[in-house]
Length: 194
Image (cartoon, rainbow, N blue to C red; front, side):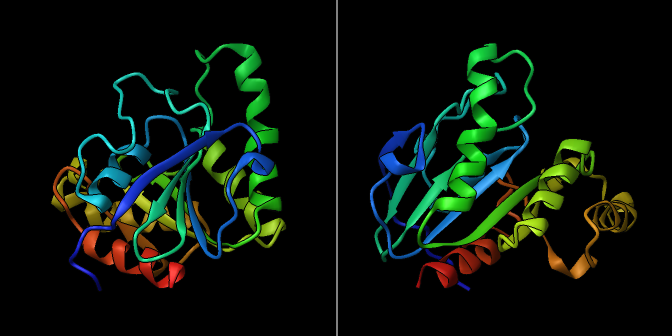
């Protein structure tokens, strides 16, 4: 596992896969609005403002792509399920996200972020079922581990795994603010980009 930060540089934003630059290998992060995608990408790169973080859910409204210094690219997809985003933008997201996940050449792994403090929502379950149905390779990452009391973690891990229809060992538990398991996730990202 790599303790060194990912060397990420913002490359561009797009509304369609066809607008993205070509890549040999790519990983993508997807999850419900407010699950902490941008914070996690910043933690992986050890940069505070690489991916735009906001207290307002739904700020990521485009496909944002970052170049990795060791080769390959990392994508931050728009968060799903946030009702206050303008209707015309929200209506465009399924086509944007699904189009990306089905059409992107070089996509090696999709990291599906699930809020570890609350477990998978119906939208998370829908996303996981869709990825399975379409045979898109994915890994579940449970965020906000620091928000779960240590005495409740074994039960929460079991419940979250059951909700995702996975074994507890198949889920990566992280905390971006506390740096918990960030090295482990970094190692997985680098492995898929190599």
